[in-house]
Length: 609
Image (cartoon, rainbow, N blue to C red; front, side, top):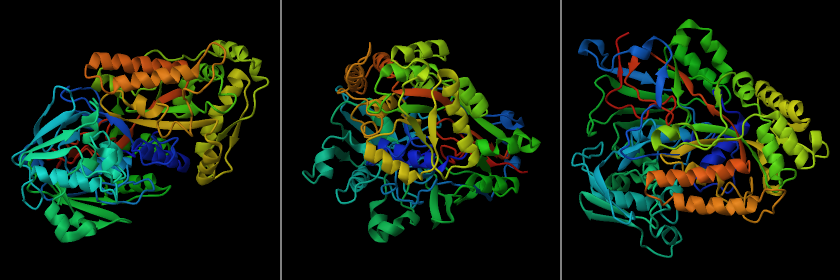
């Protein structure tokens, strides 16, 4: 996922953090080089609730195309249509191998068009069957048995069999070349010994040609969400053997509704229909060209192509908002996605004064004017948020978060005084680093926001914009964390498991980043160390609890501890916006996907225009 994740191009500093978020969520990041991006996509971490049918999270066109019909007369559909879909990899190299590609948001949405697994995500982040016709779970919730669809075939026409899955998964976990996405397979029994070359046994088994079994080390209730990620894709082993590790991607070795036919990582890749796809092909579209747009002008390039009818869609970041909304045609074609699947926040390091005192942390949370941040500074591209869990979790998991800390300047001042810093007096210097590569508007937005703490609490925050991304990251490594940083998270499972991913003391992006752990000492009436230990216990229970009501209660107790200790200061939920041609119909977009449809499935057609 993504690494995928306001309605504006991610800054360089945010892209760095997005990459880290995505890598850390995937277990591949040495440290959290992330900070703002879950900030974009991807990354992403999680959402999936099997068979719940959860609704509500859908793309809602703001213009006339809102009421277009979902079915069409044959004469309305343009046949032999070719479409162009701009693809922004946000600085990552574009690769087509699902077992060798990094955990990066755009790939989470692009790959399912070509590569398939037993399960897949919907546009809301729920999990449904793909190549699995059905599945069952053992009484102890450790063994998952999948029946493969009888019409499951590769693009080359050969049937998919159970041993192909086992072969593909072992390829992803090859000890000599472990997938960057291996994190999403580590729940399998024997995982650590297998990738460590201590055993050749792993919890994958082909029972017969049509049945495959996966055994877990513990009964993780979010496992099917992880199984929907692209690292679990099946690849035709015959093609892999005949074409080789580099060339198989263009040799019809996938099972999705499309097949890769051309590839140049720097310029574009091309997809054409897989006529052997079990769900059929679009009656309209015969080719999808994905031009690679990158760099600081990527969004502008995509929008220019859209204006010229050379692209079917384009993102609308904050930097382009005025241009789009002031153009009647573009404004009518703009789509807004709700509810949000991401959360933007401030994070403070528990080992750096003054944030080693929970009272100071809470004072910051109480003094945070989220309404101004979201609606004035970020111009309505966020919805103010007082809690961590993204809103979509309520619709797909039935989760209701606890109350957060409200905006209350008087309470913030009192709390700061109780910590020994009346009117901010006596505080050590607080530094907020922002990449020197960020544009002037981005720097000004953060400067304006940081000034609110001076206005509300009398605290001056040093806004350092002199360092590059790498210099800031090197500083974080040297100091074991940063006092104050902006972070962006995206959901990855259809349970509230993102809480555990973000805040467990042993999370790879907690230690060395924000350092909430059981060794922290009490200060005042707060004991962050004891609360961190309690949170860890709650998450361990929640991740294996099979009853949804009980599970949600455990996660809610955990989020209460996060908010109590102001481990983070929630700011807002990003409002995703994009433009899409009204004559492209049938696309399914939601908080999980953003602009790119969950797949260009057979329902997606081009109308005559």
